[in-house]
Image 1 (cartoon, rainbow, N blue to C red):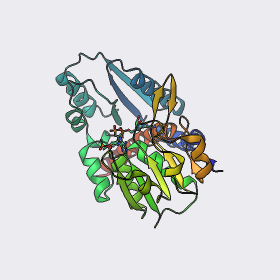
Image 2 (cartoon, helix red, strand yellow):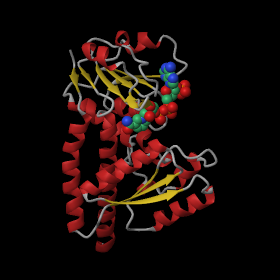
Image 3 (cartoon, rainbow, N blue to C red):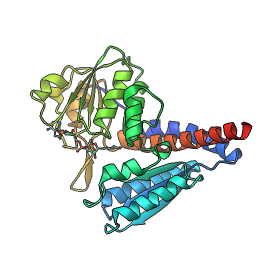
Length: 289
Ligand code: NAP
């Protein structure tokens, strides 16, 4: 029987430290501020934005919300982002995805100042992660890595299998695990013999969005299993992993909800405070020149 990796508890511990950093910044005259843009009325997006705002308030981070109807034009959205880019009091800009179909997410993300891109989705930050340069690491992958590390088990040299290859979860999480010296395999919808590959994983990260795709027979005995997937079925959140039977097989496993979700929000706060710290540093360097 494995242990449940409690993302809620770990996020709470991390947030205590983030709050201290936010308080220290405020004492130096910098109030960390996050601008959150929501376009449309998607209930899941509204829920995520509310959760982010609530957590920010708890940590003393200012969270300004810009809410628009789904009829917002791309030009209007880009104008708002440019205004926020210019606003020195704003340290993080987040555009809640998915956007309504007429808005091109690539154009929108590319418009965000990479120094304020606390979601880490801008091509400059994605490139920085790929090439090992400093930049913002996307929040969900950063949260996944923290969960894996919290087990205290080694990562270097271990087999890590990531199921899912999106730009926001699968690819960046695979890069983070590679940076930790894991031997990484990425699977996707065209992968043949998925179970044979996942069964080799010491660390299995599922980021698909298909409830119950990963069954217990696809998990290696004693593996660390991180379930990023979240789908709402009949009013209940479910992950990609068939949790009950998988718990019998894995050494550690994250639940859904209460696993990766709270860690994603904690990492967003972490990135926002990091951005404010960089702004303060830049200001003091500028001042001393
Ligand atoms: P996405 O862009 O839809 O990507 C899903 C990935 O799964 C794709 O790479 C797809 O392959 C792959 N896939 C689909 N069916 C598959 C199958 N049968 N076998 C193997 N791979 C398959 O989704 P995403 O944005 O990465 O998100 C993935 C899940 O994580 C969703 O449930 C989302 O809600 C959740 N999520 C949770 C958090 C959190 O904070 N907890 C944050 C972000 C996302 P192809 O590339 O071949 O299409």
